[in-house]
Length: 105
Image (cartoon, rainbow, N blue to C red; front, side, top):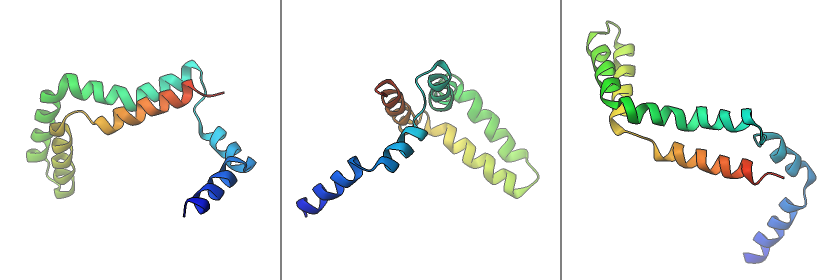
């Protein structure tokens, strides 16, 4: 099993198409690359952390006053999401992406 994994790892490391694909999806180490990561992964969590009670009240108000059942369900889900607080998964992914960008060649 270890031999099979080692051979697979060697093929992956030496595959120029895979390296090109990875380089094409990596955010660039520019202001806009870093700003995009911060805006997409950290800013929503900061907003949730700062205004969590107001966001929960807003979602709850809409969940009980919305005439359409589908919209009520969506506002209920939104209320639960805000009540759960900050998503450490999002923050972790953001940190990993920033490390990946910073260590880019």
